Image (cartoon, rainbow, N blue to C red; front, side, top):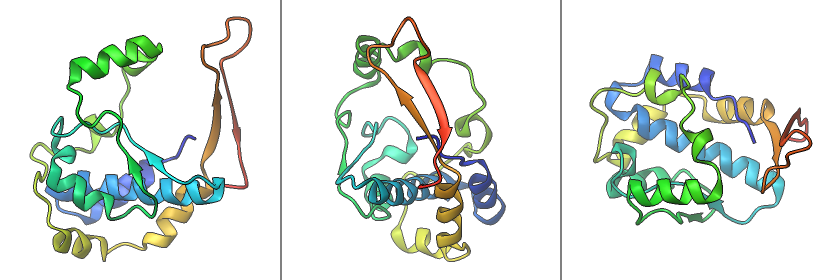
Length: 167
């Protein structure tokens, strides 16, 4: 699923102090994923987090972030270092895609000094400035479904994207 996140990020940037932004982005991502999982009748969320790899993935921040999810979270990469994750991506055939240059949230919206030990009280106070249900609904409503085949097909497009009104 392809979730439009830019407008939501801009709203967070306009209304939140820099250090908490990454934690807020991740909490909103889990809320959106939870809403999509519920509609898809999924039973669990799976993330690519690796403990301590970046600021949002410190143990303290992961604990605060996961409180926004309404589904259990599996983290199959949690104990792997960057080299092990790169090896897995190469084995799966996703590495080349993962290194394509892109202006993503990491380069545009991440502060130089993100919070590494977020406190739930401070995060919830920051979130009280937002209309969370509206923001989640907007993201979910504009989500597109992308279908991938693995291993990739060589004769036809490996990906077809279509808007899905049920989301």
